[in-house]
Image (tube, rainbow over all chains, first blue to last red):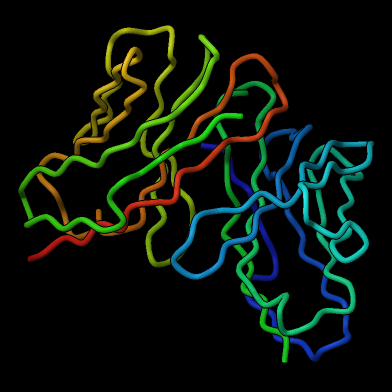
Amino acid sequence: GAVVSQHPSRVICKSGTSVKIECRSLDFQATTMFWYRQFPKQSLMLMATSNEGSKATYEQGVEKDKFLINHASLTLSTLTVTSAHPEDSSFYICSARDLLRGEKLFFGSGTQLSVL
Amino acid sequence: AQTVTQSQPEMSVQEAETVTLSCTYDTSESDYYLFWYKQPPSRQMILVIRQEAYKQQNATENRFSVNFQKAAKSFSLKISDSQLGDAAMYFCAYRSADNYGQNFVFGPGTRLSVLP
């Protein structure tokens, strides 16, 4: 099956710093990638939809200046949490859709962000 | 907007027994896809099974099968011969077939415990 690589798997940072999370599709081209946030024991909450070569579409209530998304190529999307604060601590997951297998969504392994 | 409901926050099953997880959804669309994803303690999202709404035949993948009732907008997952490795959060998800870039809508999840 398709593989989506997400790095880092865990990051601890000080309040006020920025953190970049990478999401790569290893064996397919992903024109669309999605970024989710998951709180403990809860479902996935969509943050934004990332389309290659264009600006990301953010869900209501998600600060686009806080969560910067870049999808510069068909295999890479990045999420940068700028000036992170403790309330940004969460589990972040990316997913990618294979153009040839459009109805399936492949997930990265997630990133646990802890802001001190 | 579509919604997905999972009315069982937690379920448990004895090893080797059968368990059914419930999912209902609300949509006005006629063509769509339904999925069950599994999230084990590693938190990696894994596709369990998918169903195309235009297919009447219920999907089956080894020990996993679904009961798709389109008129009732119900999509339950049956796990036969439960194994300890089946213990996980299970998310039901919906995706429209109309908009190729549209996001998946996830239910709140059901936590399944498998008792030895």
